[in-house]
Length: 83
Image (cartoon, rainbow, N blue to C red; front, side, top):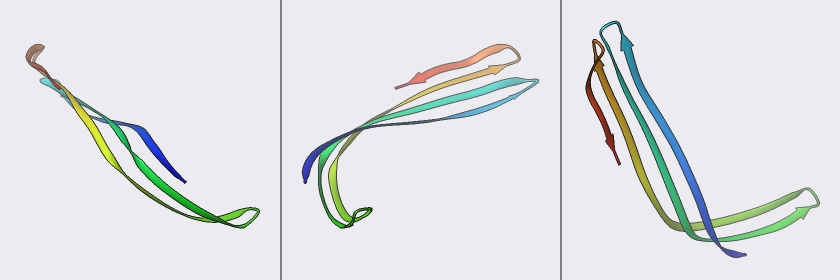
């Protein structure tokens, strides 16, 4: 079996520190889109078990968004967004 494969991936993370003197927060979000081809071959061994091999190749297009914020004693020192 030969086919075209399209996938969507996402993950993210947060760094956050806060105490009486201020706060730092960084949010990171990554999105990825994959398009490619795949080949799959499998053999049925019995009614509940089969053995298979799959090979896949393609490209991933991704983007990273970062939001950072720094407050010191209730004063906003930095509020940045990177795309």
